[in-house]
Image (cartoon, rainbow, N blue to C red; front, side):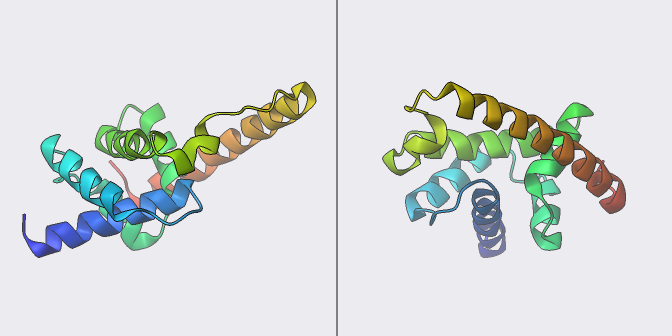
Length: 133
């Protein structure tokens, strides 16, 4: 892989990570992401590159594409990122809730439903506006 591909995938993983998490990204995760993407043959897909270049909402675009049966490579790249970070102790609270509060859980569920609807509308518009396949 040449330096431009390495730099593109580096920028990609950092942008995707920042879309979902609010902490610094470890260099080890970057390296493993790049190796995994290459190993899975996803390094030729340019959907994520377009999202990074245009500074789009990666989560919204991925959701809209996934519901249309497209954007499989983008979904796989995001899953790779999640697989790599979910085993790290500093991400534990992002994946596991240890505080059983029923009322708060209902509130979060309602908020998540509203957020999901918004992401679908926004993602659908971004897919249309930026001409994703």
